[in-house]
Length: 331
Image 1 (cartoon, rainbow, N blue to C red):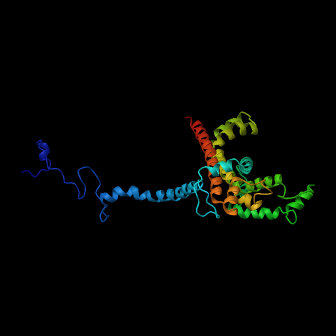
Image 2: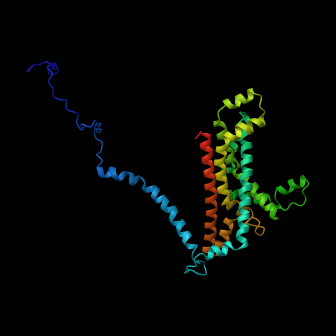
Image 3: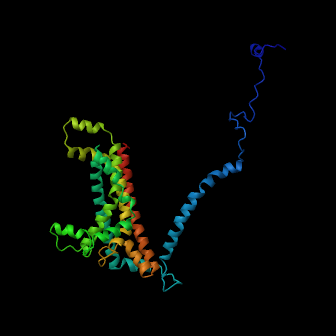
């Protein structure tokens, strides 16, 4: 036998293959690290299911109380009737046939639409001002998030004290501008107006932050081209800035509209739903039925109808958002 290692290849005969390293098979799989624990096939098969356990528990924790609450709407459960009987759709027919429900729907939509529009307009205006690089803008950008750091119920109570006709700080300011019949939130119209203003004071920074992020992500070349062509600020904003910024704004609008439709803490802390039913939204009506009057099934029926309203409106807006995003992507 020759000592030349290439003798086998020169003669055309096959030589013995070099044995693979320890642990490596013929399917070119890498050898396991030394000292690494071996994982059984059963554990590998169970790993995806184990990783999905937290998500399943979270869904169960959300869906169980939801469907339990929906089931209570078909009973007459209350503090006076702890052993409820099935009443079918009586709660729905009673509530949908009452004037108080439709008044709450009108108040809810009025507040939600007014607050969302005001917050969007102010948020875009603030974002446009902050988009200009200046020392004042950078300082104001840091202070912008302060209202978001305050709990809405605390902000509502603070504003309620400021708006008191007797000792509030707003009364002298109103008198300075010639408003001598200032009555705070005692009138139905001003109660709604102040509720919208307080909500805008708290959540306008949220819209401004999203709009500012959108402005800073827009390409600069179209704006440079419009400046070369001599386009004015308003034309540039209407034809370039707003169309490209609209997908970002729509995200903020969806979040704020859904939140305003189910707003409770700001309105309840400011007006408690009054005067009368001027600011009694569906959320406050549900609270009054379930907590104040201890008619739990009625309150849950209000909540289910509110959830249905929010769900339908949000689905319409999300579908519109997808259409806008597809159009922006050229799909």
